[in-house]
Length: 289
Image 1: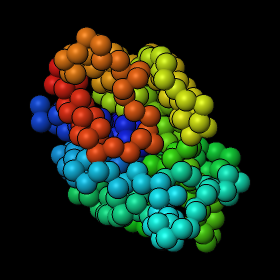
Image 2: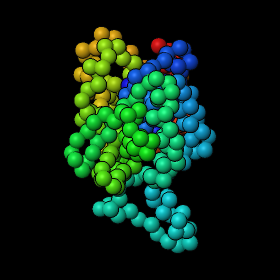
Image 3: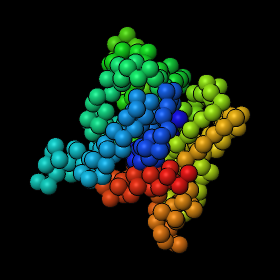
């Protein structure tokens, strides 16, 4: 199970790839947020591919997390005196959905790749129109529906806005880690679990949290996820959990004053150097285990 929204998916990509390098392999996977994409690639034996994609984002300054406002400014040549402001009543999400589309462009190939690997992967998707959340089995849907499902799973409140689905199954669909909390707990599928999360479990204080609605909705999701996951896993016979912790962060950073709750990002943050550090930190946490 891989749970991570936005930039925190760089941490899980590094951790899962490191686990794969140490001989871990999975045939059954669950994922939420952008962690869903990492989970699917791990299930088909390509955990390194997720790590490489996030490293490419780090090298490029993370265009994936560009804002819609930045895109609009570029489109309208804001440097020429045009002022671009968001309309809070119409802005579906803070991040540019075109960048997410490009990042997940080959998600439609996942059903075929899962079939070739004799593996399965389910992603958490919330249907806002129907008022229900469920696990979408990528190997049991058509390529187009799988691609749309992975994109919907990756979106999260305060980040990318919900995906509008047209046609016979018209719906407004969202994902993110919080969507998984409203799905049936998947732990009945197996008694032994490897779980990799992009958020701290248990939750850590964030003394620098701002009053921005974009930060607050993400903080709330982080708190809810950190509280729910232990309850999900309480009945499992064996659980291995890889998450960012304060002690691990200090050991990785090599600084006594390193504070996870201050320096570890919320999902929307855009910084190439930060992403490179997140990948490295994920590798560190996995290799330490």
